[in-house]
Length: 135
Image 1 (spheres, rainbow, N blue to C red):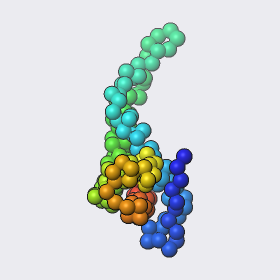
Image 2: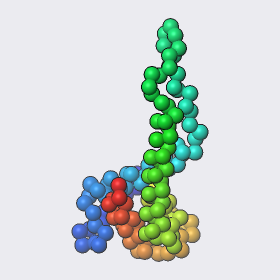
Image 3: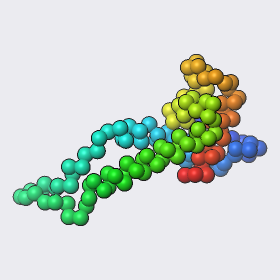
Image 4: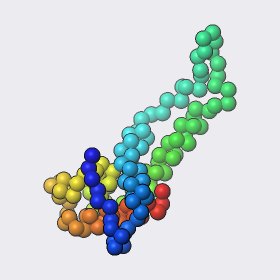
């Protein structure tokens, strides 16, 4: 597991440690949300097979539940992507990889990130500050 240093209380992007950790782990779920959204939903579970007979699920609407879940995932992904874009439009792609996949600043520089370590770290701290207020 990678380690992200929390901003100090002197930083303009300081958030309480627990809020920072929540934002960090929430952001790391992004690849799971995207993967789930890319899979075609299975709504055939509306029929339940009991021992002796086939029953409909009696009020449970799998299609509706799936639509609600997909809307929630889409909303979370858009919130994350929008915050990254607002914080650092110039390095959007790299900051997105950093906060959602735990890539280090050195890995991103090796991949061609067009900024230095200090700028990236500042933008990453700003992202966690902004997203912690939104989630």
